[in-house]
Image (cartoon, rainbow, N blue to C red; front, side):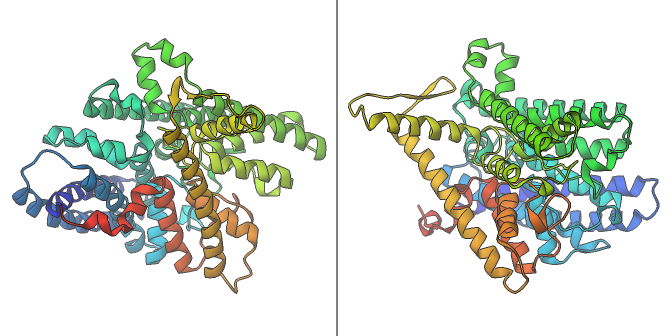
Length: 496
């Protein structure tokens, strides 16, 4: 294990985080709103601490390493430790600036940002300075594209080959990466991501949002993160005359953030054959449409609500949850139980592979559904040969077995984590619905859960150990298990 190389790359990663903190501090310093000076000072202090720790890794690393390749084993360590370190140091502004968060709460909030989860322990968000709220949105901007995918683009200019980093960043494991060199693909993904973000920003600004609010919401919409500078989330604009237009605009960009970003590269290259074979995006849109219709029609039948209002609330909520953004305009926790079951299923599945969304991904659901169908047919046609084709690619038995194992492990961890949360919160009167909702909201990177952590509530009442546990759970879910679990395998750390 080349620890100097690991220290060097992690140091550069922390330096990137420190620069982002300093830029937020500069905004707070120049902001015209009173009371931002403390936020500016604390952001600069946080950037200094983070940058100082970055140098501790960078300087020895540059002296001791001369290779321009990152081996696979080191890359796995960098991915796992990179997200952990970013979450730890990213919590410094919340820890140092008034109204202050505890260390456990700061780690929770930072993890929620970088993993684009959107769960929050801030009871009243408007109490916080705008500089801190901007940093909160920036963490989701960085985490959305995958800090390490952004980092691949930057490393290419330092002469470091970072192919292993790209493939170990869970959001972008795909054979389509071979369409171009890894660095070129990373740069193109970054341009697409920023292009969507700016389009969302200027649209929100044209609809009447201030530059600050439009920026924060654009950062967290395309990242499918859901942090808002308002406690009421998008419901803050419910009284505006064009609130329906704001919601529709956000629906468009939440949906785009949930689609495989590599598909945008295919579109730019006019590979229409590949577009016609895209199955995952069609499934995602179909699932969203079906659940919208079921919830809207069901509520019209059982509640005193107009069809238009029901369709509007259902459309925004379903896309927000399916994309794992977690914005809120309606309290779905007050909807019928069957509606909440459908929402819970959307939380589990999430968006498409290669997107900024969480969950176990629609692509794996497709493999599961087709494999289950084949096994049912095999009971009365045992000699029939089946093929499982996803997005035009045939999956072999090993790939299907890995998918089944992943889904099984994913569900088992959720069940075990629910039990752990119940144990940590013993004596508080927490309900099973709250425990399950807490784990689904964090592990699947959704944001709001059910009951005491529903869309009208927050996570501030949880105990400190629970917040730390859930912070780790967010990182585990964001990295799709293996990139973090592998850190606990002793063989990984042995010398070559």
